[in-house]
Length: 174
Image (tube, rainbow, N blue to C red; front, side, top):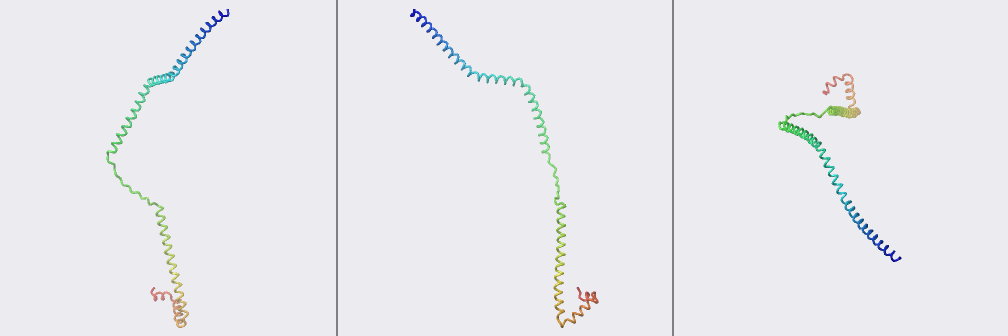
């Protein structure tokens, strides 16, 4: 009985092992098939995305036509503007000469101030020269007055100037 039990169990175990091997082989095939499907899934998704985009473009084809009409209107506007500019530049332009004087009132104020400073400087130089001549003449007159032999003459000249200065100026000539 032991042998009979062993034979049955051995046959049964062999059948189970064969079934398990078959199931393992089938599992390997299914795994390979799943791997292939997974590899093909990404390109399929991209293909589906492309189809969806094409459907959207087909739906928006009418929008494209409207957009093209708008662009065509803008292009005709630009074309007419260019034609107008071409006509404008074909005609000779009128030449006008405008003289713009950029010397304004500040320049004239500066000129006037320079002239005033020049006049004041000229008066100052004249007064300085007159004072210098007066000082020189005073030194000369004092020297002549101190000389004894000319003292009577200088006293008479001073007396004549005090009594009649107009006559003395006429006699001097200048």
